[in-house]
Amino acid sequence: MGIEEIVMFQGGLLTLVALIGIAFTFALPKPKHKHKSKAAHYARLFLVFTTLAQIALSLRHVGYREVYILCYNLFLLLSAWLVFISVAKRYGHAIRGRYRYAIAGHLLVVELLTMHFYWNQNSVVMRDALMLFNCAIPLLMTLSRIRHYLSRESVGNWVLMFSLVVALFITLIGGPLYLFVFVGSSEQQTMVGLISIISLQMLFLLGFAVSIMYSLLERLRLRVFTDALTGAKNRHFYYEMAPKLCAFAERQQQNLSVVVCDIDHFKSINDRFGHLAGDYALKHFARVIQSMLRKEDTLIRMGGEEFLILSVQSDVAEASQLAERLRSEVNAYEVRFQSHRFRLTASFGVVEIKQNSDLFDSVKEADAALYEAKHTGRNQVVAVGF
Image (cartoon, rainbow, N blue to C red):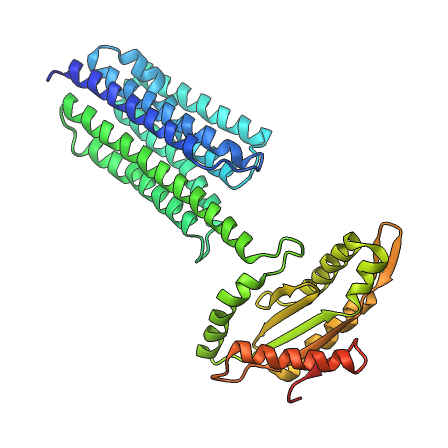
């Protein structure tokens, strides 16, 4: 197969791969967020311009050297910037005017330098080095952007990070090694370029898709475990995840206490002011409680006006002090809903989960303490064994 046939085959294959990749991005879930919804659009443009860049590279072997000179570095650098833009959009960031001007200026400067090295020096080495160095800039900026969102649970972000690290390695290490050390024939160069471009396209699409799908799974998981009205965890979380938290605390030999709380006379709020006022009171109550908790504490809505707090690294004395602060804080604010004004009070039952104790048995003890608080005057804290 001659070089012309190889170039035609390569162009057709790249176009097919790009079209498959573009179709794949349309199948991905579309976020409702204004900027996140545009991430896939820029990912598609990345596929288009990497394909055009490789086709321009191949054309230099069949007599279209000027097309290669004009387009290759420009399209490849634009592809690198499209990676940056799509990832920025993926995380919900806008590309401000200064970024746009900086990207346009960068593209223009590199294109002018490419023309200079072609017309005045005809230096292939300088043009290729210019391309590799400048493509690394947006890729490094992209990695820096992803690092802000990495965490142990963020599997999608780690996959996206890994794919871009490999892409950066290919750009900064693989490219120079082949271009300046293992330079082969025209046929070999076009095939290596084809493999490299397809690898970069697949790596980015893999990372991009996994990031989106994992983010979707995380949102679904949050919805399953989150109470829609108050934003607290719900009973699904209580039955599935709370025992695991307790087991972890026991393995770490950490104190763990349960605080059960209930809004006093909640039915009278619904009867006097209506159920919308009752819903607002529940949201207000959860918001006040959540604002007083530590990051490691967990607020769970058990149902109706009853809530449960898992307080890590707290013995019964510390949990009782927390409950007293919560009781005082709840009573300190006046609830304002439409023309209605009223104050809330709450009762609390507290118990420390002892080593080798069952969570659900401990919650029953806290419920008994709450029952005692309700029947001995309300608006107070009753702790088991304190």
